[in-house]
Length: 290
Image 1 (cartoon, helix red, strand yellow):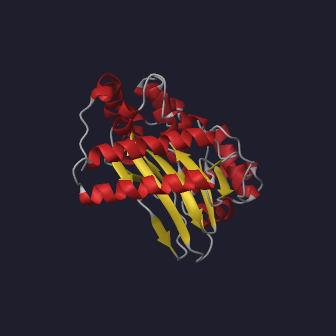
Image 2 (tube, rainbow, N blue to C red):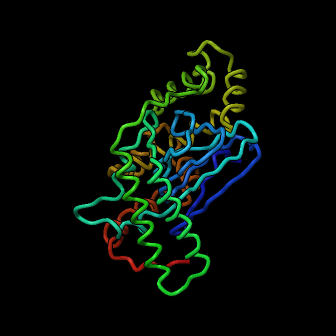
């Protein structure tokens, strides 16, 4: 069983959650969607592509398709957040030649998390709640109302990310940082748990236990997910499927295709075809709300 779950989003998924219980640590990725996560309250650490940082009320997180991420909830302190998920094709028509609403996702780094002020928080929450109500009631003009609110949310996100916040710092244990650094630097090489453990001067079983306890997934499954993530980037850059297979660290083509399909939800060939279809047709697609 693959422990880093892959969640697919159908056009738009938006919610406003408040929970009061500690949860198991898990990591996941969205193979077809962007996500904005507004954090309002709680005692929560956030794992984002190899970095863990402490969330503060008003923090806004930007997650691109195939980014590995997850929430580490420390206790039963009330935890409130507003996640907004959407497919790129759903929101692409909101941008204009002068205004690229997706720019904020490319400019985000966890070392400098984006933070909304009180005015932005109030307006952001109002837009989220308006979208939720519009989707539930589907009254006349609800689709236009949703597009207007989503446009404002993305404008707010782009406005906020232009102002640099104080560095949050990586709060993950040193051994976790060292292991993730080793994986990143050797992702395309023939690595194993034992080679990583030897480089860090720790036993393989001990390293595996610490990593699993901290992230909720095994180190090996994390390596596989990162390799598939890298393969997706290579394919977007124009690499052939064969080149992507071997350049991201796989030695067996058929195994690569099988794992890619399991994580990404489509075969590498279909993934490339979908990219070409979006480039040709995405800007003029006739979107429907479900």
